[in-house]
Length: 591
Image (cartoon, rainbow, N blue to C red; front, side, top):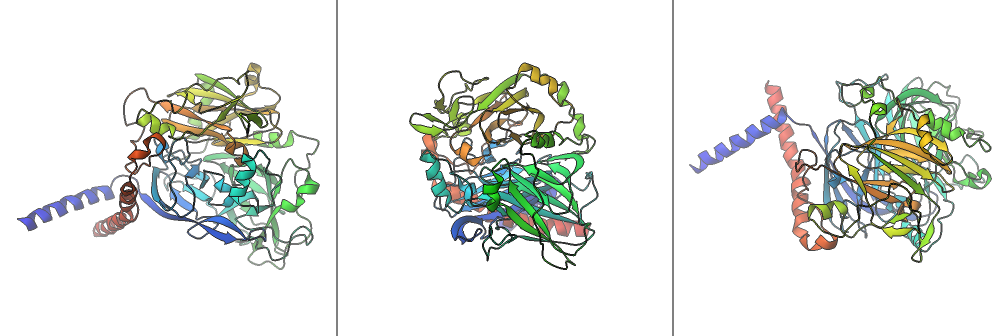
């Protein structure tokens, strides 16, 4: 009888596995061991944050609708959260990886993220979101490919290359953090890295000897997809390749109208895909350049990032001056006009068969309007802080989403103003009350002296307008109501505004922040709380079994919870799906 019972149970489990083989979306598993390593990207030894011993970290490469499982082992001496910039994580802000929604992973602990990249394609990146850690590394590319049945709006490239650019300091991120907390600016960065490496020695005076630089190998006549991400601290960068055109094809999950650029400004937190054809002769290698924008060029020349594009039949090293950056010292509209030229390809399919342009955002009635204004840092209660609409956000000890789940009172206020405060600025945990299935208009007004880029987790929004001066009601007459690009991060130029439209269909608590790390660290952020008034788990996934607890709920956290979650969703899950794939293979071969 015992044998019969065991066989019955085995048959039931195999039946379930067989049904799984023919239904549901695939799982993709990654193991992240996050540690410090010593590296010298600018010739100065310093601790950097590595993943699996590598800086930058590995590229996550998945396909639309895949379930992504990332088991993170935090071997730092600090709390850690990893956020997935631009990944919309439908129905699950539990996996967003920012302090307003998730408790951090303590040092020496594991935690497993699990989310679905549902109905998404495109180029994104991940990074550590807490305590200024992105300034020390821990970032990497995140690719979501089309399913085979969905065509891409260009010929299949001959190769796919991820390029991470960003400003870099040789000081530790902990020292940078202390500088900001002490009321001082960070000052000029020490360099610009390309894929974690310093500049090629194009100039013997500006660039020291023996710095490791990035080389990208290509074949003549081939066309490559270059996915370029600005993962830096706070510097807008101009990206260009000597003698090569950049055909823009996609940005943060949206295919664009394809246009050639000789260079493109990529602001902090932004991602772009270019198609680049290797159509030059191979007399020499070519420069790949990422240089600072809107700065004093004569002083900032030493921080320029330079890599090498090398043809397989190259005859020699790159030589001569770098390709010129845009010469717009007296024309502040150049970069804005370039940004306005980026438009949505409304005839292309995205992650679904229906055309992207079938979502006619210009004809939807707006339900909520928020004007969010930032200014230079101010003193509040003796501390130097940045603000949005007069409020400097304070991260709560108990994350907002967790407080909602367990009805913890007094954690936050649902009173973020629709217009900037007229009184003195204040420090609060003030949150925007989003209307579920509403259509929100947000005007980002930058009254600071440098470019700010803003990101909203959980959503792609439509960038419908930008201009210099103060936004007014009449500014709506300039909006692009047809093919404004849908993306998750947009720039706002100094003394200017940018307008975005957001369809609030993703339930959760979602971070709205500047991507400039210095401004973000000092409080320039808030959250949008989107709640379905109907009590149903169809619009938001339930709290995960391995949820971390902190703040007012810290007593609910037990060490066994972590080990259990890890054993199930980490190595155990990998073993389960390995067995599953073996069974599926046998079944398919049999058929």
